[in-house]
Each structure stands twice: as C-alpha cells, then as structure tokens.
Amino acid sequence: MSDHLFQQCWGALLYDELVDYEEAIRVLTDRLRTHPHESVAYHNRAVAYWEIGQTEHALADLSDAVRLAADDPMPAKLQGMLLDKLGQLPAALESLDLAVRIAPDDATVRRTRAHCRIKAGDLFGAVEDFGQAIAVEPEFAQQYRDRASVYEQLGETALAEQDRAAANRAK
Image 1 (cartoon, helix red, strand yellow):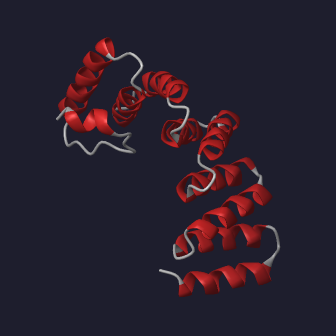
Image 2 (cartoon, rainbow, N blue to C red; image 1 turned 90 degrees about the vertical axis):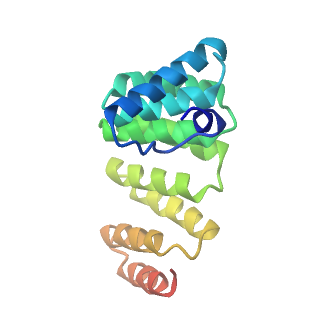
C-alpha cells in the first residue's frame, strides 16, 4: 500500500473500506515522523482525511503541503477545492490563485478556479479562466459548455452559441 503514497500527489485515494484509509493515514503519519518536510505525504494524508470526513485534519495537512511544495500546484488546488466545499469562498480563491501562479498553463487548475469564481459571482474572471483552459486544451468540450453558461449569465448569447458550436466540434 505505501510506496504509491510517497511518490506523487493524488487527487483521490480510491479505497473500499474505512480501515484502508486509516491504514494510509497511519503509514503517512509514520513517514512524516522521519520525513517531516515531505509535502507529498502531507498532501496524500490530507486526501485520506478528507475522504473520511475529517476536514479539519485535511486542511491542516494541506497547509503544510502548500508551504512545503512551492512548485507544485496540486496541494493549493486541493486546498482551494476543500475550502470551496466548506463554503469558504474567499479562502478557496486565495488557494486557487496560488495554484494558478504556480502553474498558469494548467487547464485543470484554471477550470477549478473558474467554477469557484462563478460561485463567488466573478463571471468575467470565470470567462478568463475558461479561455485560458481552452487555449491549453482546445479539444475538451465541457469547458466550452461551461463558458457558454457563463456567457448566457452575462447576456452574451452570441458568444454562448459560439462556445456550444465549439463544444460540438470538440471531444
């Protein structure tokens, strides 16, 4: 179980049983005792905590992962997603802004921030982020649909129709 927990940041741990998450947390906690500056271990333990509903522990670990992983957008992105889920939009946007600064050409980070910006009422910012994501991954159809919805909210029906047509041409 343990090797994959130290090699990269995961967005999810797809275990079947609570005991598997608890075991992952135990393994990662042991690892952090001997490797206290290992951002991947903090990040993945946060994922495990989040998936079993221990969001306070997840946020604490994500704070450490963000602090230690200055060049990896994944911890900041996940922190933003969790804060968004908890209804803390300003803090979520701060984390997602950091993730974008770290990886401005990461389409997934841009789409994640776009959705958070929509919730916060920043429709123009969401259009900008979707546009950046489209520039990086022009064949991903859903982002055109998402931007079309934002254009509709802004009263830009012609632009919304253009994006729907683009989505139909994309994958």
